[in-house]
Figure 1 (spheres, rainbow, N blue to C red):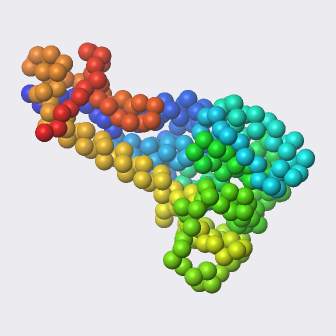
Figure 2 (figure 1 turned 60 degrees about the vertical axis):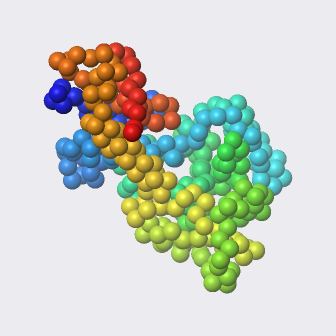
Figure 3 (figure 1 turned 120 degrees about the vertical axis):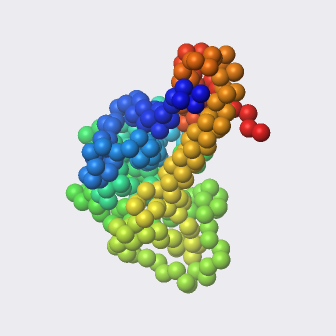
Length: 307
């Protein structure tokens, strides 16, 4: 009676992603956006993969909304004006207030992986930048997050050039983390390399490397060499953590499909369905985006016991 088994888990994944993007207040990319202009109609599985990759990229660029322990670098703590300007963010982070209306507008772009929309600083160094108001100020607060602690690094201006290598590609902000809180990035230290083997790269050299989506480690002033604090990026510019999340989700759904096809008889028994009844299953997702099988008619979650 497998012809009575009906599901489309790829479509369910796409629907979930669309709902979450709507909840963020972000536009939903079309198939044309997802395919970089090459197709107006994608197969369900392809659309789901590309939509989920888009969602993971968006989520990675957003600041998690929790109550943080707020820490200030010496560059901010020693400057009364900078401390004053950080007051709103200090209170917001400590109180668990959402500040994602102040992140880069590029996080909302429907074509996340166009070169001009990538956030290489976030991908390479794990550093976020926040504007001081929704009009998008030239001055930016740069922060690093580790667990439930947020580290305010410095306030810098990008001036009139939003692609300024001296700002976005300068190791200054990594130096700030290294000099103030070396323990939180110690796991990224590369110890099997002689310091002299890695030159102090210029901001322009790093920008050229990023433009090619090529990962480049960073050597700070005392010779310590760090791998990518933010995970680094793949050939298409997407963050490695994003690619890992996508691969894991695809594997889970493929495995669930196989389990459902192999265990549909037991699922019928679990739901007390007649052989003549259509068995319609849907994939739902918990708050952590973990998928589970659901039957709407019985309002029941399905459990599959593997042999």
